[in-house]
Length: 329
Ligand code: AHM
Ligand code: MG
Image (cartoon, rainbow, N blue to C red):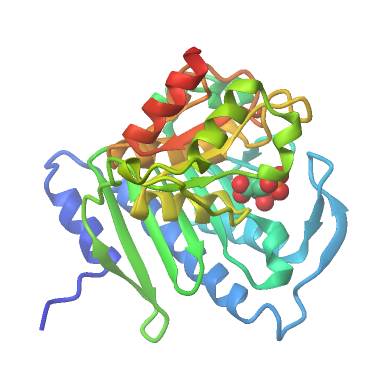
C-alpha cells in the first residue's frame, strides 16, 4: 500500500530542503489548514445547525453577508493570530486592514474567507482563497500602503475548496501541491505533487448571461468556443459554478479558460485583485497556465487599493493564446 503523506509531514519535508528556513511559513500554512478544517466541518453541518441564511448585514461591497461568511472570517483571523507571525490580515469581509496582536509579525495575509457565498444556500461548492506577502519594512507602521504589493511578491498562495470533498491547493513558488481532507482522521492527505494544468482544454467558464454587456472581441471569442470544428475539439463545453475557487480548481485539473471580464455593467470586472485573482493567478502560473486582465499579467498589476477589482482571464496556455489573438484584433 502506498504511504499516505499528511500536509503536516509534507510541509516539514519541504522546509527541511531549506537549511536556513525559520519554519514560520510552515507554521503559517499549518494555521491555515486548521482554519480550513474548522470551516469544512461547519460547511458540512451548515444545513442542520441552521447556520445558513442571511446574517442581515452587508459587507464592504454592499453585498449581503451570510452567517457562514462571518464564521469563516472569524476562523481565519483566529487561526492567523495563533502564531504571532502574521502582522495583519486583509479580508473581503473587513473594510480596513485587521491588525493582529503581534505587530512585529513578518507576514501579511489576504483572504477571501468564503468565496462563492451565493452557493451556500444551495449546497454547491464554496471555497477560501489566501495570499501571503512579506512585510518589507518592519519599521513602517501597519497601513494599507504596506500591504499593497504586486502579485509577483507573493510568498505563498492557495485555496481550499469545500466541495464533494475538501481539497487544499497551495504554492510557495515551487509548483502546486494538492491535498484532500480525510474527515475521519482530520488530516489533509497529499493527493498530487507539482500539479500541471493541461496545455489546452475544451471548457470555457464565464457568466454568459452578461453577454450583452461585453466588448465585441470577447463576444467573438465566446462564439469561437461554440463553433463546430472537431479538429480543435470545438464546440467547447460551458461550465460555470459561480465560485471562482471551484471554477479554477476544475480549470487546473481539466484545462480550459475562466473569464470574469470588464463590461458595461462592471467597468473593472467584479473579482478582487488581492484575494481572488492574484492568488489564483499564482497557482495557475505555477501549474503552467496564464492569467491576465486582458492586457497584462495579473501578477504584475500595481495595486492601489486593498479591495480593488480587476477583469480576469485565466487558464491553459493555448486557450489564453487564442483569447489574446481575439483581443489583439
Ligand atoms: P464572493 O467572494 O462575494 O462570493 O464573490 C465572488 C464570486 C466568485 O467566486 C465568482 O466567480 C463570482 O463571484 C460570480 O459572480 P457572478 O454571480 O456575477 O457570476
Ligand atoms: Mg470571492
